[in-house]
Amino acid sequence: MKFSGIGGQAVMEGVMMRNKDKYAVAVRLPNKEIHIDIKEDKLDLGVWKKIPVVRGVVSFFASLIVGMKALMYSASFFEEEEEEKADLTEEEMAAKARKEKAEMGTTLVVSFVIALGLFMVFPYYLSKAFAYYISSYSVMAFVEGMIRVTLFLCYIAFISRMEDIKRVFMYHGAEHKCINCIEHGLELNVENVRKSDRQHKRCGTSFIFIVFLISVFVFMFIHVDSHVLQLLLRLLLVPVIAGVSYEFIQLAGRTENPVVNILSKPGMWVQNMTTREPDDDMIEVGIASVEAVFDWKKFQEEMKEDDNK
Image (tube, rainbow, N blue to C red):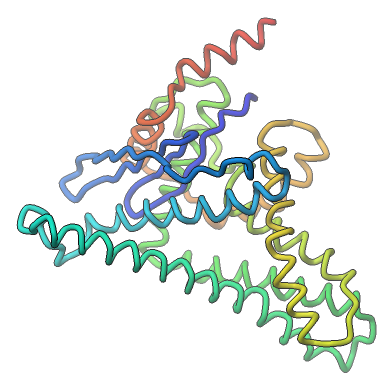
């Protein structure tokens, strides 16, 4: 299987697909039409994208920004009291754009802080409840890691019960199935996408889960007496662990090495929680998003040429 290089995410009633410096957001509108918006990713990573591990951290935050933009854009079609752009002056539209940009930045920062608090700080202090029974620091760190993983799985299980999230997870499935369809050399159509797998090794779910798993073992080797310093070191190491996880995810997407496949399994299993089988309408949206930024026919021709060499 050849690495296509495309990636994406589910948005509200739609799919965002990203290829190099372009990304497309395809949304199923209330009138059942598919609206497609194609944008250029103007964030130039420069020399950072060439440095292993560092490029993972930079790419992660860049993906967060693009993903939030795509999510907010898709949500704008379903706001009950959205003002019509035609009724706004140029000055009002500019002010609205600045406000939305500020809101997006605030949302990103707040979400990141909450995530660190819930999945990094809280498990650390919760694990201290076992200090009376466990004397080994490494075992305590392992318990902390297991609490972190359990919280993450419980969080996914909780939000997956919400109706809106269920539909997002269905679009997430459509995104994966479209990419798998292309990378397995099948023509990109509803029938072929429907029978493709809904798990993919380069998924963001796998990335996050691998971050948690690697952190379990990394934190087992941090031995300092100060609780404050222990927590500070954990927070400082998060970007490093994220960078290493990114490198693994990229490697997993490029190889069918048996060892890498085995190490990818835990993340693939968790994807059973964050993806659902999409309906044909959702698959059509995924296909539209892919075709807006990616020439899958040319890609598959190159695949055949490589196979014939």
